[in-house]
Image (cartoon, rainbow, N blue to C red):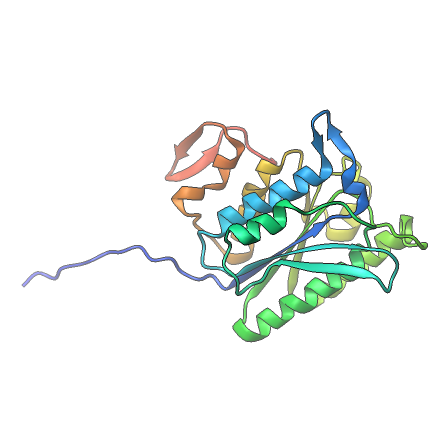
Amino acid sequence: MAQRLYQSERRSRRDIAIMQLVDVSGATDGWIAADQRIIDVEREAPLLVCIALDGMVEPYSVLAFSGEGPQAVVVRSIKRFDERYDNAAAQRIAVLKPEHHTRAGAALRHANTLLMREAAEHRLLLLLLLLSDGKPNDIDDYEGRYGVEDLRQAVVEAKLQGISPFCLTIDHQAANYLPAVFGSKHYALLPRPELAPKRVARLVTAAGGGMKWPASCQPCRACRLSNQQLSGKTTCRANCLG
């Protein structure tokens, strides 16, 4: 009797935890176009990434941070790892507003701690995505080289804990300092928020050894250009973010 073979598709967990850390400092109130502020990008990009990640089984979370001095760093939970992405979570992202300063090193260390807790429970690969408008700064001497060096040290600490940090930035001067902080291949310029999902897809692919985005949220579709099928994979003709 001939054997009957059955094939079915199932979503498989790749054991990757993803955290978005969003800079909502006062500098994000600046304008990058006649009709667009930095904060608009820093609200829309996480929304698009959440929509894409929601079709996957990996846990992910969103934090927003700002601060005023070393004792007043504020890191707010926008979406927890164990929380569904719903209208309430989307609304919390949509109402983010510029406030205070960018003590990024402290915020990154707090994010590291939360990621390590998630790893302790589920033995996950850890991806930390910082979305920022520029260099760290605060009301004290936390600016210039000091702020950058503190952020670099926080990145080093994250890597020693097994976390993979990456920075998406709107700062066109980022090449002057981010390679020394994150590494030349661990940051990217984000000229438009709709490019964020594809960048994150590439990061997850590199971290997890391959991934498949749900058909309903292929990251290339976010760029709103025509897609083409090449070797069974959806590829953006615009080659977003290189």
